[in-house]
Amino acid sequence: MALNGISKIGVIVLLLGVAFFTGCAACSNKETREPEIIEDSLVWYPGRTFSYKIKFNDLQSKQHEVASRIGLARPPKDRADAASMRKQLVEIKTNENYIVDSLTHSVPYLIPSAKRELDSIGAEWADILRRNGLPHYRFYVTSVLRTQEDIKYLQRSGNINSVTQSCHCYGTTFDLAYMRYDKVTRSREYMHEDNLKLVLGQVLLNHQRANKIYVKYEAKQSCFHITVRQ
Image (cartoon, rainbow, N blue to C red; front, side, top):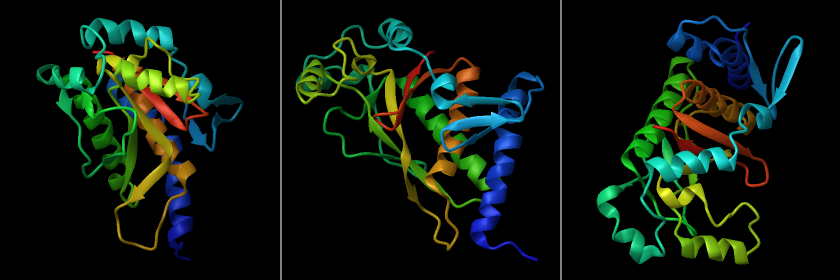
C-alpha cells in the first residue's frame, strides 16, 4: 500500500538518520562509522545515546581563540565603525537555501571564508533534501556580526549569552535557528521542525568533523552557534 505524504517523509527522515548522519562524513574521509540518528534532542542508535549538547559543545573560549586570530583585527565599536571595515567583509543576503532574519542586534556581514562556509552549509542542506525527495525548506540565520555597541545593548537587556569578548565581533561567527524553517516547495507534504533539525544537525556534524567549523548548541536561544575555523 502506498505511503501517504507524511508517513513517507517520516520513513525517509528515519533513513536519513541512518544513512546520512555519519555517512556523509564517512564518504569524505573513507572511514566506516556506526549509524546515528538525531531525533528530537537526542542522537541515538542501539546501545548508545547522546544529546545535541554533547555533539555540539565547542566552547566560547575555543571559538573566540580562532575568531580573534582569523577574523577582523579588532571588534567594531558601532555600526559606523563596522561600515568602515566593509573591504574586509562580505554581505550575506537571503537566498534559495537560507533566510537572513530581521537582525536587530547585528549586521549581515561576515569575513569571506565564513560567508563561503555558510553558503556551503546551505548547499549541502538543500542537496540532502533534494536527493531524498523531501520538500525544500530554508533555515534562518539569526545573528551575524555584532558591534561592541550591540553587545552592550544585549547585556543591558538581560541576554546572558552576550559576553563582552564575543566571537560575533570578528565576522567569523553566525547563529542558525533550529526550530524555525521556511517551506519553499508547494506541496501537501511537510516536515516537522525536529526532523528538519535532524537534517541541519547532519550537515553541521559533517562540517565539524571536517574541521571546518566549531559548533555550540544553544538551548535557551534555540540556535546553533557556529564559528568558521579556516
